[in-house]
Amino acid sequence: MKKIFFLAICLVFAVASMAQSSNDEVTLFQSMYGMSKQQLIADHMKFTEAESVKFWKIYDEYEIARKEIGKSRVANIKDYAENYEKMSNEKATQIVKASLANTSAFIKLQDKTFKKVSKELSPIRAAQFYQIELFLENIVRTRISDEIPLIEHMEVKK
Image (cartoon, rainbow, N blue to C red; front, side):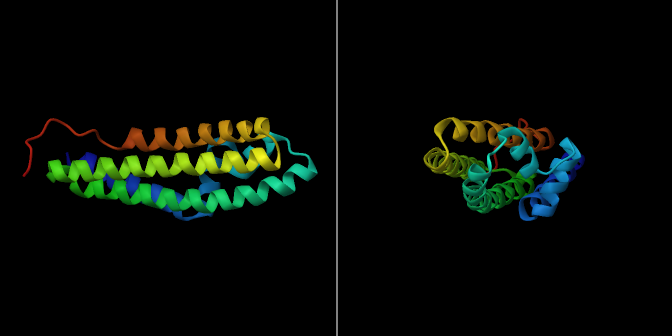
């Protein structure tokens, strides 16, 4: 149990540094793909010069908001790790509600960004960005899920 808790804490610090530092994020994507996230997107999207000017302005706004949501996700993971061995019904409810709110905020951000990119470029170009962003987000979520221990059968703490 202590090993699982230690792994969860290590994950929290790894994800926290990733969410708080674009340099760490660049390192993550470079280690996975040999390039930065922006380069992955640019390679996938193959922007014209006119599209590039419009897109990267929207993208920069998106990334600022996405990183704030990431910080919230990290805080919730940390709360989970700190309370894992003494989980109560109330704490479990609080953590799940925070996770759902975080997911909702991320979906709203994606929707808002999709609309902006659709308007400035086209709905097809916005869908291309949405697909690559969703792919990358799923990789991050999978890495986090692989490291966070599931709640085992335990006595309910009141």
